[in-house]
Structures are given as C-alpha cells and as structure tokens.
Image (cartoon, rainbow, N blue to C red; front, side):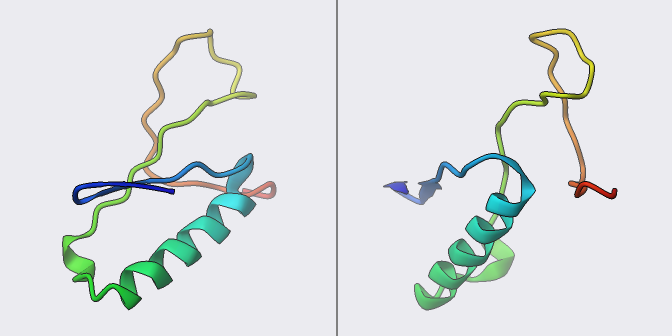
Length: 69
C-alpha cells in the first residue's frame, strides 16, 4: 500500500477473491480515516488473461464475475 497525496495505490494477488479481501480492508481503512464515501473513487488496472483476446488489447469492464458468472 502506498499513499501519494490523496491517492492510495494497492497491489493485490490474482483474481476476484483477493480483490474482495483488498476492497474490504481498504473500506475499513477509509472508514477509520473519516473519509466521505461519496468522495472516494475506485479503479483497477490489470490483465485480462483467459478472455481469448490479442495481447495488448485494452478492456474496459463495468463489473466483475466469479467462476460461475
């Protein structure tokens, strides 16, 4: 976890399970810090392996799914 001004940068392991843990912990951290939830923005950068797309393809998703969709 790195904090640069008003930005927190965090790396997580592979997949949605580790992302779920990360989001839970970050939300607790923000709550304890007294942050206004309406002013917090989350975004994730990562790979899209296994989607059958050419290397270098940019994917913009609106939701995440688990193994059973």
